[in-house]
Image (cartoon, rainbow, N blue to C red):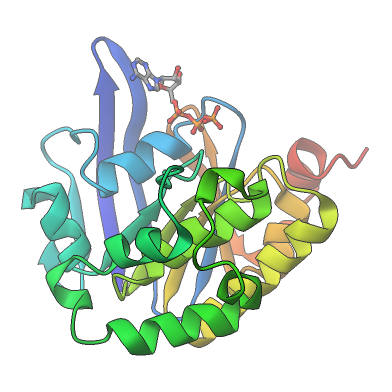
Length: 236
Ligand code: ATP
């Protein structure tokens, strides 16, 4: 279980996150909705140890305090981040990108088993293990990025806008893969602009405005919430 309490991020004088609290349970998809600049990426970066959180934040994963750990130990604690723009190594093959994902200590023993799972989640990758990643489509690169994160055997997977720039068909494939990742017992925190499709697969959601949680609830309830419909689902 990921439990975050009162996390704040500042860039100089600018407050990007203001005492945000949230939880993600194993085998749960939680979506985070919010306009551009609401602070969603800052939250994921702070949890992944890429930007410092302000003192007073608590973020525990299975009881381990992530806020005290350097970045590589955060992965070893069970948290994996797929950043916006994917963060894959374009000049390397699919296989090498996946291997790099298995470098953390917690991943080594189960490398072959996880590789099998990733191939069954994304069968297309199996045919392209030797292909250089930069020659692949955006959707395929996103699969590599998610596969690489899964190689670290995460308990919680953080995804920043994975559907950005993908065609509707590829988006459907991606969201259906996320459902299957949930079935593996992994908790997924999903930052998405695509509110309709992400709420359709999610269990719960949070609505973020200017660095604060302004709404939360079951995904189905958010889908029918008039304010959410107006702001994020294009309803009149
Ligand atoms: P988007 O969907 O556009 O990525 P977001 O909800 O992920 O938005 P963040 O990227 O977390 O939002 O940004 C939150 C706020 O912090 C914004 O006002 C942004 O301009 C500011 N910000 C983000 N990164 C930095 C930085 N490195 N230096 C200064 N300000 C930053």
